[in-house]
Image 1 (tube, one colour):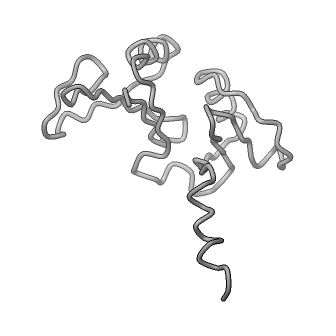
Image 2 (cartoon, rainbow, N blue to C red):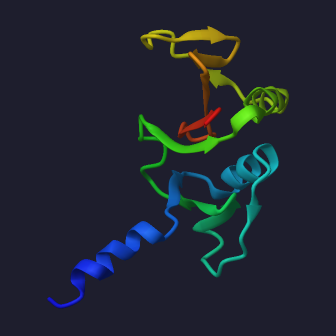
Length: 137
C-alpha cells in the first residue's frame, strides 16, 4: 500500500498518552487532581467515563474500567530531575504511601527513595493499585 511506511513513522513524532484504568472515576479525580495536582485538559469526553490530564508536554488519561488495578507493572512515570526528593516528601505529606522494592539488585534505599548510583526512583500506587513512578531522570 503506497505511503503506509511513512504514515506509520508518524507515530514517532507524536506524544503518547499514559492510559490508566480506574474503578471509581470520582475517587480517581480526587487523587490525580487533589493529591498529584494534575489539571484536567477540558477535552470533550464523557465525564463520567474518562478524564484527561495535562502532565508536562504529554497527557495522562484515566478511564473507568472493570479491569482497574489488575496491572502489576508501572503504569506511568515522571522524570523529575533534581526535584525528586522534594516531590517525594510533598506526596508523603499528602498521605501517599511509597512502595519499597528491597529485592532489586544494585540498589540501596534511603527512606522511600531507591538509589541506583546517581539515579534515584520511587514508586507509589493510586487508589486502584495502579503503580506510578517518579525518578531523577
